[in-house]
Image (cartoon, rainbow, N blue to C red; front, side, top):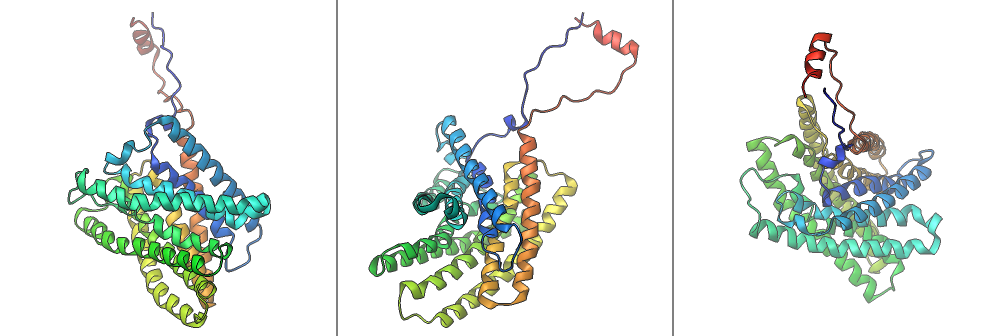
Length: 372
């Protein structure tokens, strides 16, 4: 007599290993809080939505960290030529939640918000500077790197210093004026240079790989969107650094600094839109062929968020309606992307439904049922 065997309940998430790449979910959620707290136009309910995304990002940061600590061996992925690069997501996740805390958490946490923001920024900065050295070192000495190895994830370990530069300026006003504050600004500018020049080195390798070998396997196609991260974040960082310079170094000409910002930001913003169109077209092409869910889907969120913050900076600096309209369009894209990716992530960790079998005739049922 045939007796069906009980099968343990499986979750789709069981086949997705935990790694530093899951901090991309923290980044993609926290950036929405940052974006919604500083728009160049009035959006009803934006402050409440920003608070909700901040709380969700904070919860995700705790959850991902706890799960990672229970898994043990936090640096076990350094030998992996793909996952190793995503250690940069850990640093950026910390700083993104810190920036969101500074942007919207003050009204709820009061005086506790500033130490939390500063602590997360400091931890993320130290970790980000470490990944900018350690991960490329492992890539040079340990990983097997071929002509087709380059992908958008190569930027992940070197972008955190740019996030440090963009978010650290909010802390300058809380530092003692004089030598200490000026030193902090100089270090933030150095962080900007680390990430921007490293991006200029890595980006041609990604371009050549895509041009010669195509976008790669489906799971890596979303990582093409990571290129938007250092581009959008560099515009954001340049805006905040040039705005903070007169406060930190008296005697600086604000108008000259604004002109220098626009001279840098406008070409970078234009190239970012070009890459957005290219990455979007390649993603749509892959969607038609099939794009299975992977944690790399979160690459659709944070990089677009940095492009929104960069466009917002251009709107503030130029006063042009063009950038306000562009901010609205990019914000809509970010909200749609986050909703789709968040829903897919939730489905991935829900219990998998048993596959439905087509109805069979009675004769075949009896034959199957007679198997011992």
